[in-house]
Image (tube, helix red, strand yellow):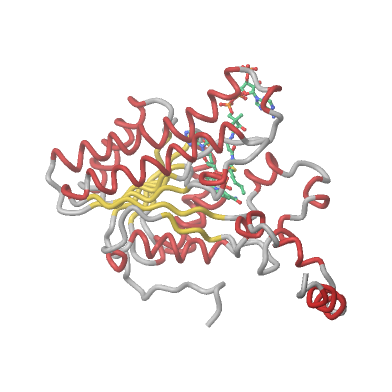
Length: 293
Ligand code: HXC
Ligand code: NAP
């Protein structure tokens, strides 16, 4: 068995109704695929209906699962409420929400207009808030026994990061919301968790974070202690577990899946990785010689 393979047993998400925002592309599509393979019914939402339809056709053929496409800009609360209603009209219930939709691009912060900063905050933080609030109100009002919210953040939600400041600011807010509501809404049977992925190649992210030859200059795999970028299936495995009842006692957690990337940047002496093995005898001798000082 390898990390590139599906992990959970067949039927682990049988008949669970899941909404995946930004489910038409990238990681949202990868997670949706695995949810369908595990028996879930999945509504994929984003601004681009054509893209959603294309993905849905592909995934229906591949998995035989039920997919609903709903055009919904998460920045607009009315559209989110209408999306929720469409899912309820179709399947009669909703069990889980995956806040995956995001916007991002690299830029020196002083180059950003006020609107450029807002657009990222609005998609990531306000969008996650809009979906969480609409779905939460529904679950509480209908006294649904249990529900799950899974939020996709980033490792810089806790470290911060230069050149993606609006995204870092927004993702930190989503993480705070995850932990806060994990406590406040546990009494309603709603569980909240987050995943902080390291680099997982997608067109959406790579076009905006590593444009042109930047992807060769800043090869993300080089920053990862395990020496590679993430594979979509391993993220999907984690997401499916957190969506499933197998993780019923995990609440308010953020799980990092980055091969140790962010810690490599953080540890004070991690730069010593570049010291060749043969140099260590000489360094050790130098250090030992200072013992009596
Ligand atoms: C400076 C920019 C800009 C850029 C846009 N703007 N691109 N400013 N540098 N590269 C400015 C515009 O001029 C405008 O400001 C404002 O931002 C809004 O731009 P619009 O194009 O009108 O916005 P919109 O059409 O809503 O598109 C949103 C978007 C776009 C975020 C700009 O990139 C998008 O649709 N993204 C969705 C998908 C995405 O980003 N995926 C990547 C997620 S990756 P003015 O003042 O002119 O009106 C991710 C990974 C994290 O999150 C971690 C990786 C390890
Ligand atoms: P992606 O393919 O660009 O996914 C972003 C999705 O969000 C798109 O499907 C987009 O669809 C949707 N979206 C954007 N604005 C929206 C809006 N206003 N309303 C509704 N949907 C909207 O990029 P990705 O890499 O898969 O990213 C998915 C998630 O993983 C994001 O939360 C991202 O921050 C996170 N992440 C990714 C990485 C990585 O290495 N790839 C690392 C850490 C975290 P439309 O354009 O059709 O609306």
